[in-house]
Image 1 (tube, one colour):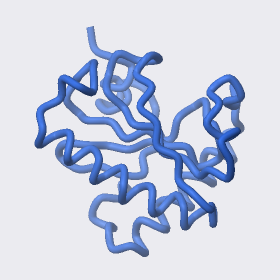
Image 2 (cartoon, helix red, strand yellow):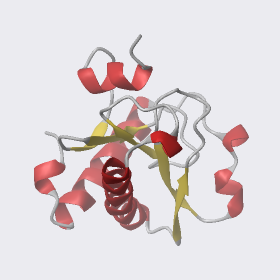
Image 3 (cartoon, helix red, strand yellow):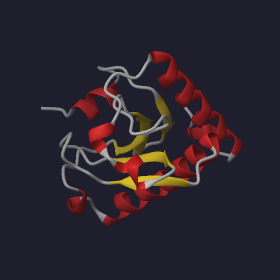
Image 4 (tube, helix red, strand yellow):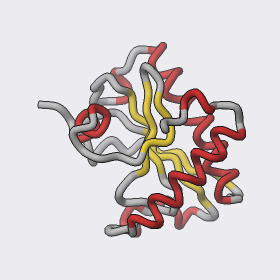
Amino acid sequence: MASVFSMIISGELPGRFVWQDDDVVSFLTINPLTEGHVLVVPRQEVDHWESVDDELWAKINGVARIVGKAVRAAYDAPRTGLVIAGLEVPHLHLHVFPASSLDDFDFATAEKDPSAESLDRAQNKIRDELRALGYADNVPA
């Protein structure tokens, strides 16, 4: 059975994408730790991060770094958080989000029902920064 992330990637479920390439996508999470929280996900279904092949692992991390730069710039954040939790969905994903303190890393405080407006705003801000960084070809329309 396809993971919920595979269903988002295929378009069966809606997603607010900020990055797409042949191997990796990034989209907003519906339970953000902070506004601008995205997930970086391989198209290939891999459950455990330690199982992914080295080439794809490098690609996922490279995209997370690029998206992290855009997130940090979009929110003028002092840091960009990066977390591999791996418990919510059995499909490898990296959490990337603007962070001001360690409190921002607490999944118990994640927003449960963010407004569509806040998600749209985050998507647009991150897409704009990715374009400014020279990655317009990877920013979905």
